[in-house]
Image (cartoon, rainbow, N blue to C red):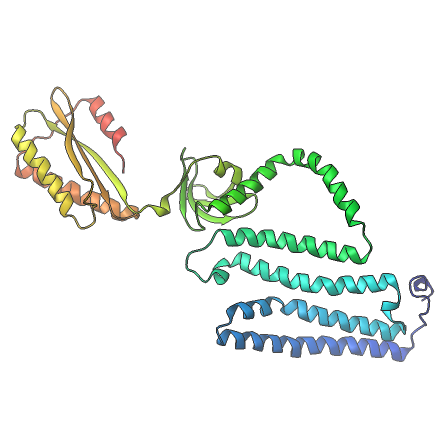
Length: 360
C-alpha cells in the first residue's frame, strides 16, 4: 500500500471485509451484465427488428459489448473505491485514466457500427445493388473515429495538440516523399469511389486485357478482383485509375462478327439472294438487334469472295450470345445448301485472316 501513496496519499490498508465486498461486487456486476443487461439488449434488438427498425436494431446490437464493458468498468471503479477507501476522482492521474476509459467505450461502439456496415453495406444501403461508395467512406469514417478518440483522450492528459499538429506539418512533406506510392494508391481509391466506374460484383477488364474479373472489394489502397485463372488479385488503385477500364457488366448487347468464304464461280444473283436470306434470318431471330445487321461481300480474292456477317445480340450473357450465333450459323449452312452456294477453299493466308478477324 505504501507504494501507491505517491498516487493516492490518503489511501488506507483494506480490511478482509473490504476485499470480500469488492470481489463480491465485481462478481455480482459481471452476473448482472451477462444475464440481465445482455438479455435486455438482445430482446430490444428483436423488438426493433419486428417493428422494421433495422438500423436502430443494428446500432444497438453493435453497441452491446461497449455498453456491457462500460458497466463492468464502472463496477470495477466502484469496487476499487470501496477497497482503497479513496475516491479515484480526487487525484488528477486516476481521474484522467477513468475519464479516458469512459470516453473510449462510446467511440468503440461507433467504430463497431461502422465496421459492421463496412462488411455488409447492403444492410445500410437497402438496395440489391452494392454501392462502392459505402464501404470506402465507412473505412474512412473508422479512421476518423480512431483519430477523434485519440485526440479526445489526449486532451484529458493536457497533451499539446498544437505542437503535435505543428510537428506533423513539418514532417508531413518528408513522410509524403517516402510514401508517395501509397498516397497515389489512396487518392486513386478516392477517385474510383467518386467516379463510381464500377460496383462490387461487376465484371471489368483493362484495355490491355492483363486484368479481367469480378470486383470483390474496394479499399483505400487496392481493389480486390476475382479472376478466372489467377484467383484473387489485389490491384493497386493507381493502376486502375491510369488505365481505361471496361465495365463488361454494363453491356446491354454483344457483337458477333463472322467472315465466310464462298467460291467466286457462284452466280451474282444467287449470292445476292443468299445474302438477303441470311440477313432476313438474322432479323427474324428473337434475340438479335434489328437496327444494325450487316451481311455483305467486303473483299474479293482470285478464287473467292469474303462475306462479312455482323449483328448484335440483346444480352450480356456469353452463353446466350454463343447460342444465338450457333443458330445463325446453322441457318447460313441451310441457306447455302438450298441455293447450292459453293463454299470456297481459300488459301492459307485467307484462313489466317478469318481467324484473326473473328470477333464476338
